[in-house]
Length: 95
Image: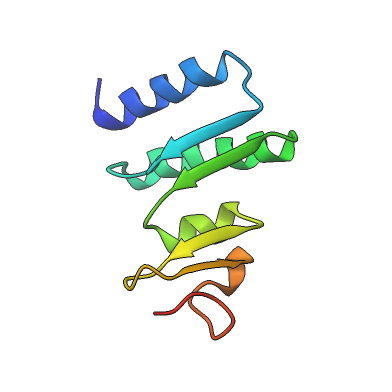
């Protein structure tokens, strides 16, 4: 299996247990664009079903697509909680 396929199989195995909360570390790291879209669309459907996704990521666009609320740690280790669409703006986290 490719790296992307392994990640999708691992995610499927965890989701088959029907958890209310998924805790993910860089769920799209190392995935090609198609695999990333598959994972993102799955996570959007998971959240729409009333489940919670807690994840760490360096991909700001992923946070904007998925999150209603986000906590950011900037390069100076300041912690800022903001609605995800505001990340990187004056009202969001520092550059």
